Structures are given as C-alpha cells and as structure tokens.
Amino acid sequence: MSEQPNASPAKNSHAPVDPKLLELLVCPLTKSTLHYDRDRNELVSEQARLAYPIRDGIPIMLVDEARSLDDAA
Image (tube, rainbow, N blue to C red):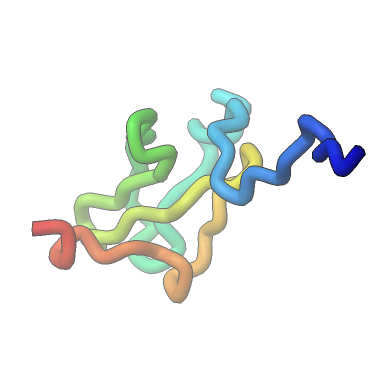
C-alpha cells in the first residue's frame, strides 16, 4: 500500500528552451555569443571557457553556477 507517485522531480530535466531566447542570450561575463550543447543541456561560452546550466528549461546565467570548461579535461 505504499505506492510511490510516478511524478518524480527532475532538477536537471531537459525541458526545451525557447529558441528565440537562445538567440538573445549572451555570456554575462564577456557579452559574447553562446552555443547550445544539447547533450549536456548547457549554454557554452567559448570565450569565457564557461558552460551555463539549463534547469527545467531555464538558463541559469550566473557565473557562480557555471561549469569551467578547463576542468572538463
């Protein structure tokens, strides 16, 4: 009788991001363009060497939340 509901929260779900939003966003550090990495669900700034996560379809454009690309070796 202890059935769990099927709805489990997914903190890093791959909810779609509005393509028009992606066209407008720039790196908050360098103001350079970003490219969308669909496999990792991130927006990548090559100039800043940072990858900004996308959570529940919302880009998290905070430098403190970004992953360093230099650490990904």
